[in-house]
Length: 195
Image 1: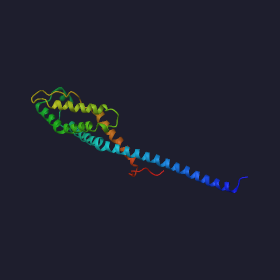
Image 2: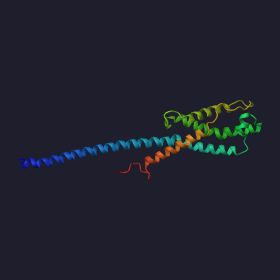
Image 3: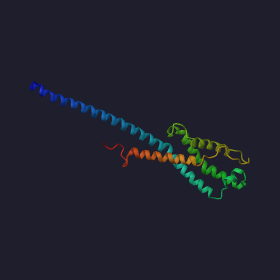
Image 4: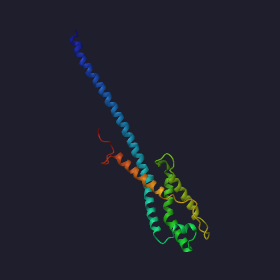
């Protein structure tokens, strides 16, 4: 037969054990939530840096340059075939060079400098080909535009990568903006909703 003292101890032991188990579960759950929140905050900070220091400015400069390029193509400037064949008149050549030096190249240099300065913020593990090609193009054009006055115009050594570069920048910016919105939540909260 179980005596009365033993019977009164069993519920107390069960209650104490349950309290300890619940406390451990709550502690572990809080630790896991804290680790998840710290990781989310670190990811949000990284995405913010990528947008603010690289992809945001790059996106703005690409958008401006693309608008300028479309406008130039629709104007009286010589077509690509004429430029590359060296068949431009002196006036056309001077006008084309002026647009390059004053219109396109300043933004191209800024983009190249952003890419080089903030290469650590590039989303991929390696330097993507469109970015490599663009930086090489800018260097090539700097040499091309530095030719001595009066020397025959020649084609730059490395052509602009074109649509792959524009698409890379636009897609990278859009992807990071979506990631930022996801990390912030629909209503801009910086903490995840309660479970």
